[in-house]
Length: 253
Length: 277
Image (cartoon, rainbow over all chains, first blue to last red; front, side):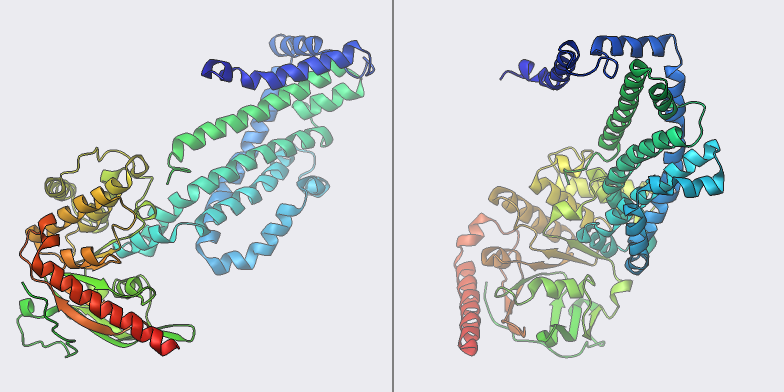
């Protein structure tokens, strides 16, 4: 296959999806009230974004996700690196981290409502809590898996434990930290959308999706789901690009 | 040129001798066991100054473990290692790892890897740059030092490692099988550079090698080790004049020295086989 033809390959999946979607609608295999066609849905997404409030909801969700993620990063990375640097410290909290990492964060939403009410901060707090554990765990893991030879190389050159930490361990952990940040921001988005649905909210994609469903505005529901998908995808791709730029040696050294 | 065994000198450091006549590194009563098996038991060795010393021995006798203990990379159970009567902490050493890929810092450019030990030592910016210029002049790398290590070939990376290890002008340079992951052409080139630096600076070097040709060709003293528990089977001198070149490999003196070392090596391997039966 020529490189030119190869470049078109990623388009095949989406085209097949749209074709199957159209077929389902046109053959009336699915009740048209429950599933509008792809053309109508995409047109609605466009109109709601250009002339409607989709943009505002998109930005509201993005803003909450970004705040939650910022909190998770500021707490999770330094804490994770510190935990990773001390094996005994890590072992002593390993069970707690693993336990709460395995607990579905959505199960804690009612608990957070007790403490923070139905404020906007609540949505950010629960989402930050979910992300912080993933970020912390990965940073700790990155430090613990630092190449022994690199640590020895720095130590034999006379680096103090603090310099080894700053000049070697932090850098060594960056690659794994980025894995954590990428999972963290996806998780933050998931929890923000859930929180927008079930903790009283005036805006955001989660709020929009559940509202549209309740008044059977299915076009808007599908369009909002697509918008949430676009947001998640862009965040993921953005982080991949950032990862490649910052951790330029990843996978090559 | 001769290949005379000179025997093990286990005398304590003689402080009355001038420093130039004293051994640079004195290892006394070094002991190390892994689990129940003793690897070293009361091991003594003197490593001469301003000379290249090769360490050669059967597989598993702990050649790398020996220099790792001397360089402070792994702890030992008992014994003492002194550098000119000083402890390791008071001594500047350089260390070249077999695995250059894991030893270099991939987040720093090659040149910044070389600068790193100088910055650690707190040298001023002009001092650092002057030292870098010296290193570039003596190694004459044919590649761009502003590249990242992963953009360089294996040999180029190992050359950067050696430049980094030599940057702070160490009193001793340790090399742990530095050529074993390189192709033959690069090995010859780097060996030659290393010898050149030795001729220019007289830096004491300790080389672990599993290649007898290389161990003899580079060295002034060859330490032949036994199987574990490891002792010195023989200390051998090889006194061919420097610079040595490819031709040295076919000199009569080299051939005699190598044959002698091989004889000692085979005797030790057989002895161990006999003992285990």
